[in-house]
Image (cartoon, rainbow, N blue to C red; front, side, top):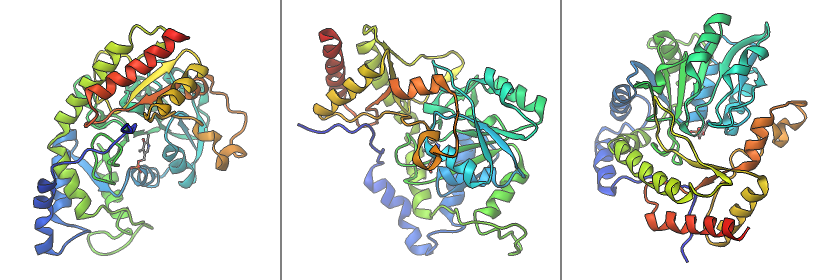
Length: 367
Ligand SMILES: *Cc1c(COP(=O)(O)O)cnc(C)c1O
């Protein structure tokens, strides 16, 4: 019996990728400032409706380059229900994370709690559009203005998402995307930093190349976060399929939702008005952690992989256990115990989804 992974990268037709990289063998430019980089950046500007952006080698570097080029110091308010990269980026930038609890319905930061966490040390808010769900961008924007804070969005999972017909990259001071292979749109590895501030992007463009400016002078200590031409070429190929990818996922999600909506102990993702979803993940929430763990085990016995996001919460990992204590984020804790990601990717078959639905429904009919 075949094994169904929880995720699988999208692959463009092999010949299309070969055609895309062919010229690299003539130009001999395989990284640094090459043709593919410029082509990919300009296509992304169009797609994201964002005039100022730069590509970096991964989503984590996008976050670090943002945090390290905005003159930040002190505390950053963020969410504990995210991929560990978000927290590592804050800590590695010499900043102190302050954890804010999340909403139970979309798992994003609970904007109503942010103000109570602001101190005279707070310098920024780093919300995450987790699973492609849109944070309360309006309230966050209001708070940031009121207290003069920077907002850096971790939109690693939110490529293709729109809010009120505006691309998600248009909110906050900086928005960071990941182009990792597990994301719905990828360049094998890669990241994008977007901003409405030209100066910040210019600074990050230098930062990602050891700090060199256009005069080959270095004014700020830099790093190496460049993306290669081979990666950019993969991004160019995949971008042609982004609408198809989202449509295919939407279709599979609808099948899941139709099949599971009658199970009363499962809370399904909600479609919110004003939001164009990207269907990067299919997350369900169980009424109890026992159900969640039973279903994960049962599916695995049937050759179906699932993923328990985000369990543990980011501050519960070994390296942070003794660093952050007495943190109370009850909703995030509950969600880390009760949510489960089911398989979702472009090549997943309808029959696979049917099989998964049957296994879950049978369990709840027996229990
Ligand atoms: C994937 C991801 C990252 C890191 O992106 P990479 O490209 O893997 O470095 C950061 N934050 C979140 C929420 C992610 O899902």
